[in-house]
Image 1 (tube, rainbow, N blue to C red):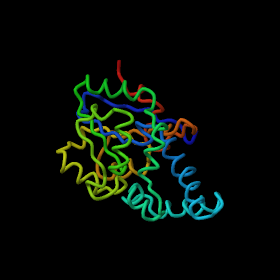
Image 2: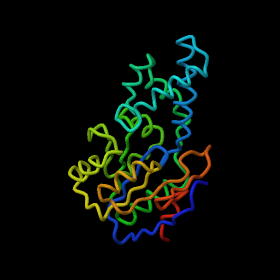
Image 3: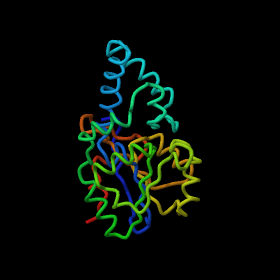
Image 4: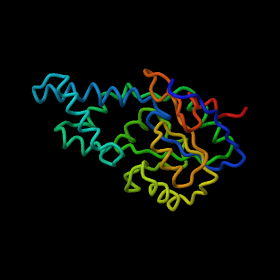
Amino acid sequence: MKGKKIEPQIDWNEIDTVLLDMDGTLLDKHFDDYFWEEHVPEVYAKENKLNFFDAHDKLMEKYKSREGTLQWTDLDYWSGQLGLDIVHMKEKMNHLIQVHPYVLDFLKWCRKQGKKIVLVTNAHSKTLAIKMAKTEIESYFDTIVCSEEIGIAKEEPVFWERLEERLGLARDKCMLADDNEGVLQSAEEYGLRNLIFVAKSSSTKPVQFSGKYPSIIFFKELMNE
């Protein structure tokens, strides 16, 4: 476990909008990790007559070069770059898409508390469609915003400025939960105050608490009964 856990101190009376990331936060990131780090390199290796390890190293370098940009999650971009039908490949593997434990309980609890629930994701719209169809959680959200609609990734503070303008948010009355510290830092720089780090993004990886932000393993930790 990286860092000592900082316990969340959320005053729910002061929160009217709950902003939630998708991959790694609400959904198990095991699907994404397996898909991009194992399945895609395997298919790419076969298509290009490479061994798996060479293909893997080459793709990791490509991914890394686009991290934090809209292209990083753009399925059409990667289909073009890799010569693979990434959307079709994801659809064929959708059985691995899973909702984290206690997420549905938390969404229902937020609804009962009268909170506005907004899904805010860097995921490409085609990825979003695949995951919403598989998980059937779309109905829990008042609004869903993909970063491609905003025109910039969540890692940039201007994203939150544009989101506030779009949704009419009061930044001091929002809570944001995300498994990416870079995103939380970006939101903090913009002025969002109630920030939660999700410390177990994947069911197959160990808990890693943030050294800077309050952390949870499961969303049940935020529900005041």
